Amino acid sequence: MKVLFDQGTPVPLRRHLHPHFVDTSAERGWSTFQNGELLHEAESGSYEAFITTDRNLKYQQNLTGRKIRILVLTTTSWPRISKKVAQIRDALENLDEGGYTEVEI
Image 1 (cartoon, rainbow, N blue to C red):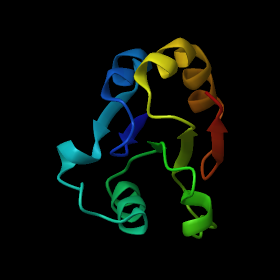
Image 2 (image 1 turned 30 degrees about the vertical axis):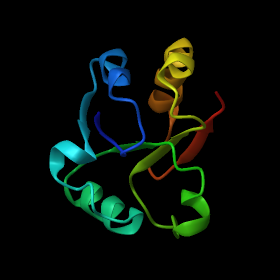
Image 3 (image 1 turned 45 degrees about the horizontal axis):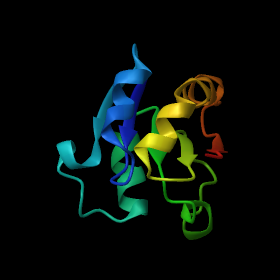
Image 4 (image 1 turned 180 degrees about the vertical axis):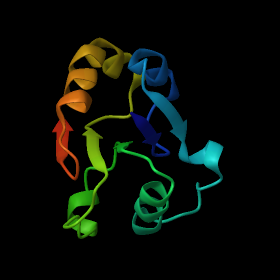
């Protein structure tokens, strides 16, 4: 699966999502995009999943009709996230196209 990390998503998580291919919004040069633009570019770029720490995304964006899977982590803290990598990986792999879920950390 092709995955895009939002700015607040800790990059070390990437190593734990193998065999998925992970890019960051910064690597793509998309750091200045607002969430709506970022989701549009991600879907246009064939990304299948978007991982973010922005818990307000579902309130700020109309997610109806989106194909990209959206996974929200409830913290940006890598030490806390690192203890939940198996749960995050499972949530990502079980998320349906166009689905949205939050992983409580």
